[in-house]
Image 1 (cartoon, rainbow, N blue to C red):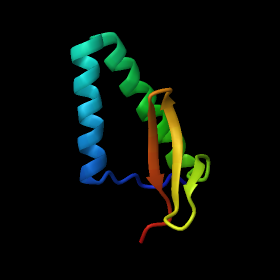
Image 2 (cartoon, rainbow, N blue to C red; image 1 turned 120 degrees about the vertical axis):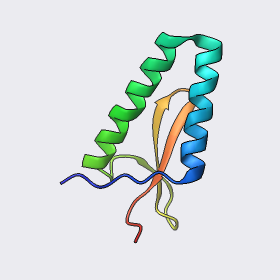
Image 3 (cartoon, one colour; image 1 turned 180 degrees about the horizontal axis):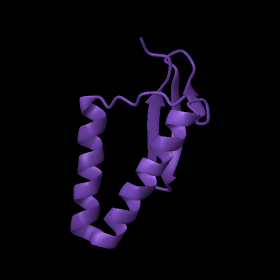
Image 4 (spheres, rainbow, N blue to C red; image 1 turned 45 degrees about the vertical axis):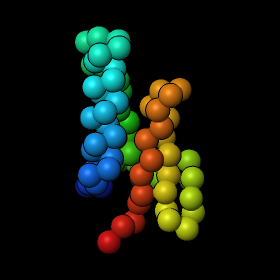
Length: 79
């Protein structure tokens, strides 16, 4: 069963800034491909939350590379 993904404000703001940058500097195709890739990775994480590399064990933070310039950081097991 897939986990529910909850975006905090900081994550949402950062994602939107990346999209704005890509749109301005690289155009529609690059922006679209980035968003598609990011959401595919999010779907994978929802199904397999332990798949990312452990970045901070105490805070339960994991990471998953989206592109060589962008890594998605997430936490699991938050109540």
